Image (cartoon, one colour):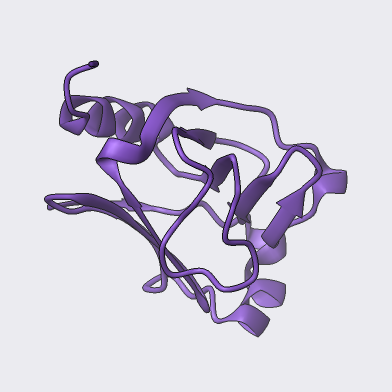
Length: 128
């Protein structure tokens, strides 16, 4: 199991407490079968088999911070506009989230996005 911190800019740390996004509840954990994302009250599980692609992406300030839903069907778990990784899904579904069950992508801000991408890529099943 590997754990990565979800980035939270200092200016947003206090407002993010409204959703419970403390340091200990802002983590991405790579488990045996799933990516487990916890960002305050949001708890999202993505099976590695459902990951189509991973890439860093821009997150404009007007998309907002916290638990966000972007117009391109992206579920955002974002505490910073820096280090945002987009997880593109094979099937538009994630486990453990009630407010957006069919996103095409999940975006998460990370303190070490390159290491996260490398670690997840190493766990992906071989392409069929």
